[in-house]
Length: 393
Image (tube, rainbow, N blue to C red; front, side):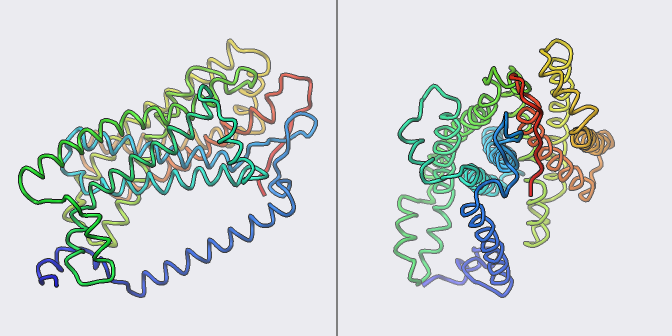
């Protein structure tokens, strides 16, 4: 049986359910059921119900909101992986309470992102079988699944295992039906100085691997677009570094939002103080400024020295069909940078303003993902096909 001190060592009422948990679970299951109904309609009636169509004579975009959201979600996951590696390697002790949150963001975001890919294809079972049968290791698509999905998820699970052994050892001392399984998870855990030193060394080595994999995974998504020579608006050397930077931007914004929720719900004002939010806000500001550089660099390259098809896409984004999306996204990035930069110069941070900046960069990033995917498909035909259209239903 656990002692009173051991029981109190488990924070936030871990191991106990209350009415709030039950309400949240019911609400999430309701959303899940709504999604199943919508997806069943797509399966039975075809993807035409999503307003996606083939390029060329069909005048549409075969990649739409599904792939845009997939890029956003996996970008958040890869960015969280990068931040996790930086925090552990850099030894930022005041950010350590957010390490597991970053791991959880990685797991959830990558799973949701790749489920979006499955939802995008018309025959998901056949598609998954064909990936295993016909995958080419030299293809960037293969890299997004091997490095981005399998390796990233595996490393995150290993990280969670190492970080959860202490909690499992505490839980295992309580007489429950899960005690045997928890003792198995906690096997090898020790609180001696030597065991703690070995744990720190293994965590540091794992963090270095996680950081490298995060960069490679985010880059692989950029290579999927940047290596398609025959698709104006995609082909270019800036796609991979742009994807890595935007992944870090969105992950930092999501982390700020979740950290603020945890601070409020779990009453973690002592551990998640303004020093944590100030540091993350400054990081978000610097990353946002770095990505703002990519916006005019892409436009100047595509609009000034490119072929006619690429110039047409640039005009569509600047002054025509997609202009409202482009300018809204760019203005949101600039506004987020202005908010963060002003606070950094004054060395005074306001949590509400930080959250506004975090929301702005994520809204801008989602719009930017749509601009990466759709215009090149509807207006980037090299063959003499009419321009297409896409409006998600």
